[in-house]
Length: 241
Image (cartoon, rainbow, N blue to C red; front, top):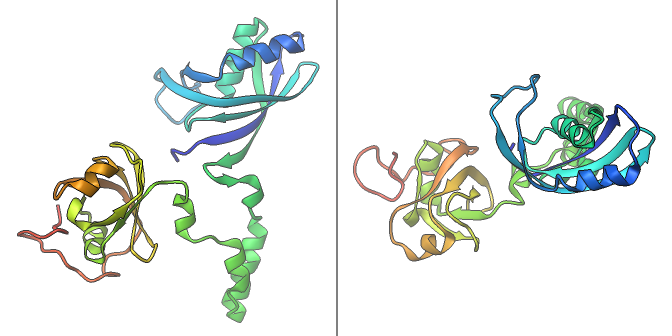
């Protein structure tokens, strides 16, 4: 939900504008911008800052402008079109929108629901899972772009039960992690345990002997899959909190 998004959008201008002027104004929106979510949105209409990383004009035909935009999650493209129209002085609205990428997943990685349905049917009726494996990815693929914190086996079940990850439970960690970063907590075998927010840098996780390193925000692994090494009361590296 919080990853970078990429779209192709079709914007319709309400009056004729020189193509060079349209390109010039769109480029002004690259960087951090203020946005207030539109009336028809599912979030509070508070002014907020969002970042646009790239805007590329693909085609201009009359009042129709086709462009690609790479932006921070939570950016409203229809609001972007509206604001571009205001700067141009002609007003504008978003006519069509297509998401072509989320994080490291791109449109070409997608499969049709029909393919999933057929693969599921073959597995259920014939016991053949080969087609299902072609259309489904393991959960670990979701976090391929995130820095990893690998934990010892003894810390896994504690996290599964809601504990925070303390330094003694860490086996190794990717370089470059800063406090507040979203990280993936993994087992020694490469299984996804949880997503969490780093409470210290990777250097601190390696050098310190105690302290909370990561606060999980979403746990994926089921309790009981790994041996329980923690106690409800008392000490221990995997103590429930």
